[in-house]
Length: 317
Length: 130
Ligand code: B12
Ligand SMILES: Nc1nc2c(ncn2[C@@H]2O[C@H](COP(=O)(O)OP(=O)(O)OP(=O)(O)O)[C@@H](O)[C@H]2O)c(=O)[nH]1
Ligand SMILES: [Mg+2]
Image 1 (cartoon, each protein chain N blue to C red):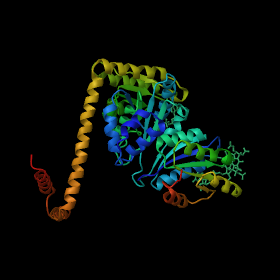
Image 2: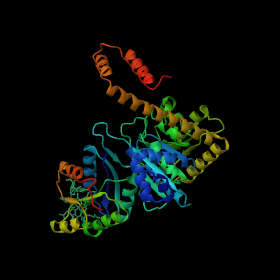
Image 3: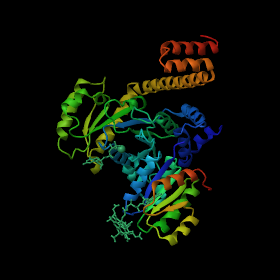
Image 4: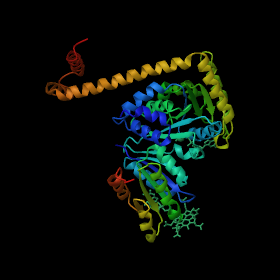
């Protein structure tokens, strides 16, 4: 598929939808699409919205983008929901809460299922974001699945991370122990119409003071997404963080780090495939693998042996 | 490959139970279902484009199947979306031939079993003639 580059010139939602479908399903064509988009990416501001299940992430994205879209800015939204580990199916419900965005020609929403990934995102999230970026989206918002305490994948992809909490969840103990609480650039206490919001804000502010980022004091905001309250302030802070990144060179640094991360992921993937196809072809190794399975041979020895053989096959180091 | 379904309640129809029941059933059959809630044909097709839907599911118990159903198929084909379009809900027997003529692949009435919907989708997905 050498037409990949011409697809990027055309700028149509229909074509973008088809490109993303190839990437989402990791088809053979997707490599060409990703190669092409890799050269074109780099200008979008990527914002991650994360937080516990049901805290109001989708409702917040809906209201945020409804306001932001009025300026005419091109917005891409990637909304991730969990895959059932038992059936491999998924019910992707984020979009239901973003109904006010349907019909807006400058908003493009893609729902993804985690498909077995554990870090709060789908395996192709970074790729999907890259294609949206290359396609000229200026702001890309990623909604993670409802997270607990260990899902950090969004950090690798996003420039700005917004953590959406609800009153009560931020009680002192929880705040102190939960690692996920410390990753955000902007903190939001949503559902501030419910009791305990002020206490949560206070707790979060206290925590922030202990975890100050260099030259960036993470703001703590109160919102009521369902009533569209606090959105202007949140938009301001997101914009302010973007400017902070640009002026402090972190914008470029983050992109360079991401390029390397991607290279590492790709190498590991290729290596995996290489090892898989190599050992599948080797009768002798298959027998040894069986011995490891039976507990008659230790896995360390065999693993070293296989890698050594593979390196020899490619002409040594 | 994973089958992706975009499921909508057609127009303003208030009966959401069937659409949700079917969405859950299809999820349990291993499909990925994007649930849109209530939407009109333009928005349903827009969502199908963005999501890369293999199947568009329309649920209607409100009597708007003939006015809005065919419009979904027409708009989709105009935009080059070849997704399988199926419908369910309370729909009079007499209207089914009209819907099929308009390109709705199948119509499922009350008390339909999950398996029959899932089987139909697996057998027909990707084979729509545009
Ligand atoms: C519960 C109910 C209500 C509830 C709805 C609750 C809710 N939010 O879901 C309430 C009380 C709100 C209600 C209101 C009305 N209702 Co009512 N309601 C029903 C009732 C009794 C059951 C519907 C139901 O939930 N069934 C259970 C679900 C699981 O079944 P299902 O939806 O049929 O779904 C199955 C299949 O149809 C199929 N399916 C459904 N969708 C899809 C989609 C796809 C893609 C696929 C493949 C399959 C599929 O698979 C499902 C599983 O087998 C039906 C009677 C009936 N027996 O159907 C009347 C009925 C649907 N209602 C009817 C009417 C007239 C109304 C009102 C207009 C009444 C009024 N005058 O106020 C209002 C509607 C207002 C509006 N704007 O739409 C009529 C519709 C007549 C018609 N279409 O010609 C019915 C048939 C009753 C009757 N015999 O007159 N209703
Ligand atoms: N009272 C109140 N309810 C809210 C507010 N924001 C969202 N909700 C409600 O909270 C529920 C969950 O909202 P969602 O936007 O789906 O939450 P989410 O974080 O996206 O949920 P997951 O994606 O499932 O993790 C919905 O019923 C919303 O209407 C708020 O500010 N106040
Ligand atoms: Mg959500």
